[in-house]
Length: 121
Image (spheres, rainbow, N blue to C red):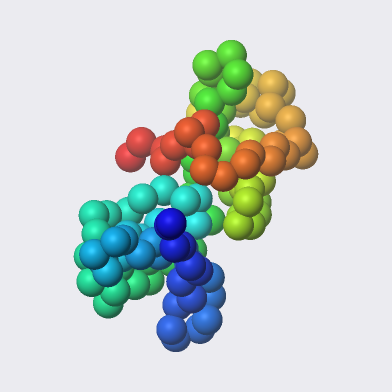
């Protein structure tokens, strides 16, 4: 039986991820998108990993893979325990992008998802 619980940041009580307890009493950190963020470790280490990640993912652009295998630049609008809502954003490149992207559209994806990837730096 898998035991996963919310991790709240100690300084402000903000929900910043999840911790899974392993059979040998180690902890695996998962971010808000339910992506694994390390190997099994001590509780203090796992909490520190999630605290360091925090909510910064909400301020970054992401790449969403569409059903047609195209990548669209998006920003996270909301994250719940079950889903993430994203909306298209301008990529700062061509002015033509603004004419082809509906910036008012949003898409809700169930978590975990393999359709959302960090933007390459």
